[in-house]
Picture 1 (cartoon, rainbow, N blue to C red):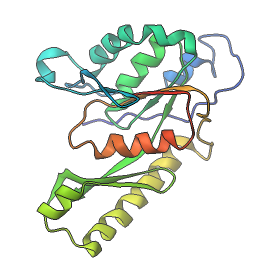
Picture 2: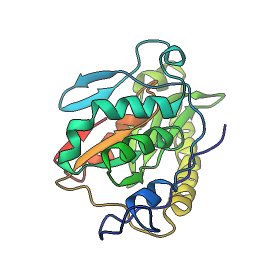
Picture 3: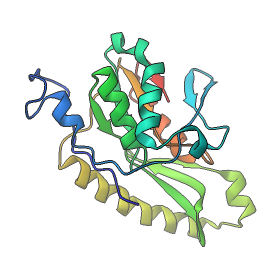
Length: 212
């Protein structure tokens, strides 16, 4: 699987479209791999959630197709001058299509899954930028995860999270989300740990509205 890579996107300043530094050229810094999944819409509390309920491979050709079709549903948000945040790696190609369609700035929100030892695809939790950690207590209990195992997994993924922050941002600060409409994009939801961590990061900055 190829990765999606994004250089941090400055949000201030107006640059003509198509020139280096414009929103178009910034969004084009995302390198996307082909995708086979994309979620459906569901609502949970005050967060609008896109969550899959069918075989996504049958519903969308790839992540590009999914992103373009999602963007048509989000067109009314364009007037709110939203910012689009993609979750690496698979969420970035989807987020690119949404940002492009809405003429919105695109940025990355780094989140790392905490996999059960020996079953890394099964999430027992997730960590995100800013020291956020979300745990799936049911998975932890069922898998017999000890505190030391949990802390070891957290420390390991924290190193990778920090590496990705340096890689994607190059020392540039994260965008300011206070008072903004934030569209958070991933390419699917399994246990929910990753998106819960991402939501916690965004909510801590008091956005005006959060759409997932």
